[in-house]
Length: 77
Image (cartoon, rainbow, N blue to C red; front, top):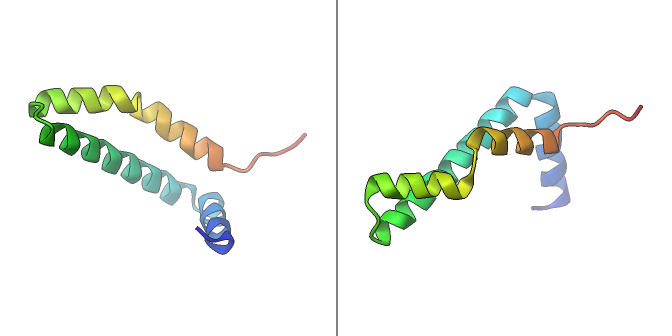
């Protein structure tokens, strides 16, 4: 990612927080689905693969909130 792309991404996350939250959610869902597919390809049953993928990723809501807050601007007092 170039410096310009990183700046544009950060600016977009500050100016459009709802869109940024959707992007983070979409990316987490993608990674979860990828992990499930890899586990199923490895021979796990679909239910077991989904459970193991969620366990590996952790609390999806907490991960999303942490990612969103990491991109949020901080105000110094």
